[in-house]
Image 1: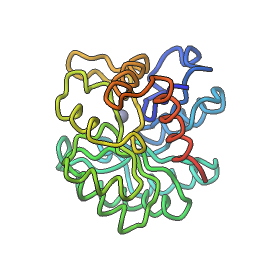
Image 2: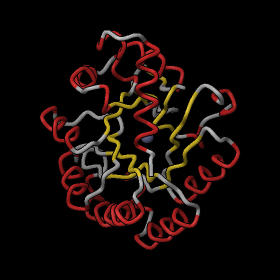
Image 3: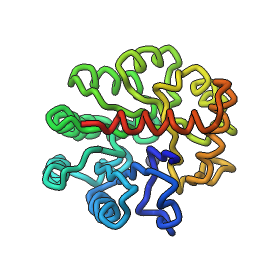
Image 4: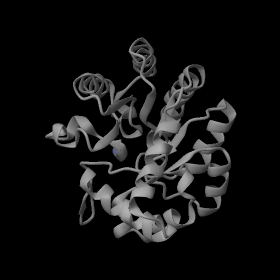
Length: 237
Ligand SMILES: [Zn+2]
């Protein structure tokens, strides 16, 4: 099974195509897409739904909305919150409200042992500190491009780092992937995002597995199994 730990399923066409070959953790960006993602997971059983409010959408969301979304998550037995986190790089103007909302998500993650599917642009260290303060155990740093000297602390805490196909053109991400042990990596596409010349899509995960096989001098099948094991470990309750 190919793992896509961070994919915006509500924006993808032809999800059926991945049934039987992939396992998806589908992220949402607001209340509406959270509900749509829960719906999708009822139709497609290879999908783990994540619900949340993307840091980019905080300006048009309220703290009350975040709370009611968490009640929806609990009543639907949702195991994952995402895409959530903090972003000081693209939307620094909403940081105070982002923190307020993210704390609500952390409270629920702590109480219900939820997986966090994290967006941490410019805030890697701050988010890491918050995870420790809240004693959140299951965290995934989507498309990690943060400080390289934080990787060891992330690993020691049992957190996971996302391998995005952007490594093909993003040197820093490539370096991070090659420094991180396989035991703490998960593959993702962030589809259908357009990153420079790359149209990110789940088909590219196969190339990421080939890269990991080369970096670790392992058979591609072994790498595929290990990444799937990591995914199942993260979602163990
Ligand atoms: Zn995303």
